[in-house]
Amino acid sequence: MTQVRKKILCIEDDRELAALLVEELAERGYDVAVCCDGKEGLAAILRTRPDLVLCDISLPVMSGFEVLELLSAIVPRAADVPFVFLTALTDRDSELKGRRLGADDYVTKPVDFERLGAIIAARLTRVARAELWPKLVDLNDREIAALTGVARGRTSAQIGKSLGLTKRTVDYHISNAQKKLGVSTRIQAAVKAASGHIIKP
Image (cartoon, rainbow, N blue to C red; front, side, top):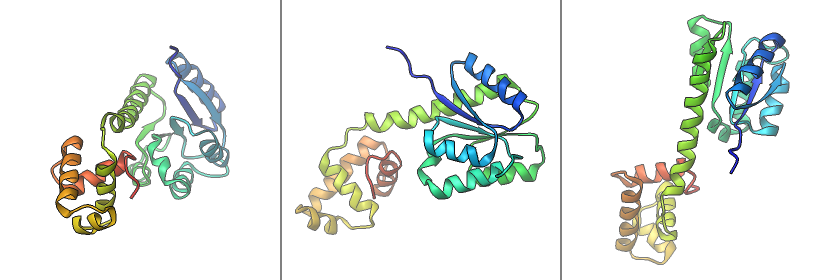
């Protein structure tokens, strides 16, 4: 079975560097698309949902900061897509601003391709792990319903009333869910199940 190549979107207005990024990353087994300004880049993220975004900060039309800020506002779930700034701005304030906006990494130019390759591989591995674990956790319908109630701030008695179960039975299901999720409290179980999209609060 052929492995699907991960898609990387590169938002970079320096055409020479963009071509070099395409070449280097394609050699590492990635499919790379390029956009040359921030507005075009944001549209491409929303349209193609890449596996990772590499974005310059000083871009025409819309800066990299604006791209990430707008992306987070429009599609909160896009936080699942690793976003890496690739920039000539080496000052601490720019890096802090990038990280405050939610960037996963901040890489300065000139590009060290070995380091960049390692960062991309690490970010994609982390995403793959995050996607895999919910599939390995086998919560039954009652456990999911009980945890959904917990996530909505309901007590076991309230959850039991809505499900037609006793408080004791609800507590039993929540306790089982905690064990399967490897956590010690019902709140931790609800948070972990929600972050893995096992439940929808």
